[in-house]
Amino acid sequence: MFSLLADYTIQNVMIGAALLGIVSGVLGSFAVLRKQSLLGDTLSHAALPGICIGFLVAGTRSLPAILIGALLTGALAALIVLALTRSTRLKTDASLGIALSIFFALGIVLLTFIQNAGSAAQGGLESFLFGQAAAILRSDLYFMGAIALVALALVLLFWKEFKLVTFDPAYARTLGLPVLALEAALTTMIALAVVVGLQMVGVVLMAAMIIAPAVAARQWTDRLGVMVGLAALFGMASGLFGALVSATGRGLATGPLIVLAISAIVALSLLFAPGRGLIFAELRQRENSRQLRSRRVLSTLYRLAAEHNDPAYPAEQRMLDAYHGAGTASALKRLEDRGLVTGTRHHPEPTPHWVLTPKGIAEAEAELAPRGNIQ
Image (cartoon, rainbow, N blue to C red; front, side):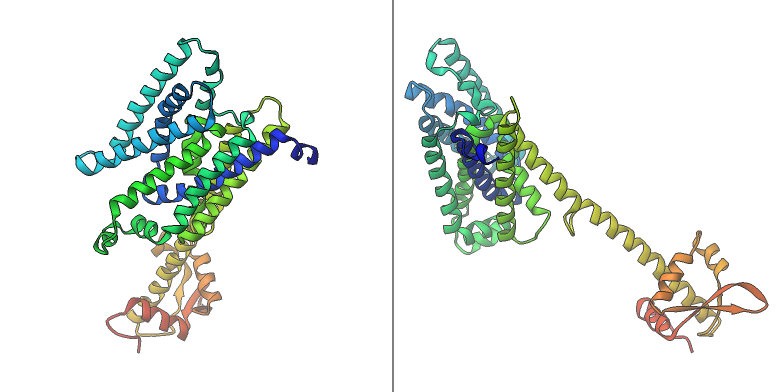
């Protein structure tokens, strides 16, 4: 393990994966909360023509030129989506679909043109479709780190404004905040996250890195600050895990492994997160059903006592079973454990009977608010 960590290439991949996870987690949180989960998919596909334009301008496979081109076309696509949503009757999903289709089609045309031109410098350019983490150089990391630092600095600087625009843009507008400019800034910053991840996971898989860390973090908390921190942590952990597994396995691509790792974190969060996880929701649903059944049995005992004008009226368990259509033994046991009912015998009948306790009468009266109390 230590020999792997000492390897220059693996160090580069791990640092790049960590940067990608942190930035995509932080910025993706705002996209998910603003119900723009498909925005990452659109911007990642919209980066393809920028990659090609950057290559054509630089004349070589220069990562800074390629990433700057990707940022420009990604930001342009984001602004087009905002313009279509604001100035037409198109919904957000339709605007995202239009931008994605047009920009990705343009990118494929430019990529085909470059490949047919026969230039040797274009070798490996198609790797940006699916990522090629092993090709990252230390100089590339400096450029990616600068982009990540700018994005995170902007989030810290405008944290309150971004938070308000995310949750209540109408109120932000009444306060005089430039809502449109802030929304455009948030969207453009997501394009920054896409740019950071292009070399690692590529155009096709980058959408998962924008959405998945934030979705996983959302299951564990209701606070934005905690969610952003967890999303960054989940993204970084999945990036490091994918890089390590790729380094130890022969022929395993880093980008897909990172996406599979964060997908596993999402699955675990959806299942086991307290409060929101599916397992906890199922347990809570069952507990609610048991409590509801117990309250119904308690109300039945109370009404029977009220009808007979006898607070100590012994209700036969078989009668309760017939009334509720199934066995009531478990509900009665829970009520007994809470001190609301107590078992008794009613001679000459040998079957179990149940009587309300004073505490049970008080709770039933509080829940039912009947017309008259038992005398």
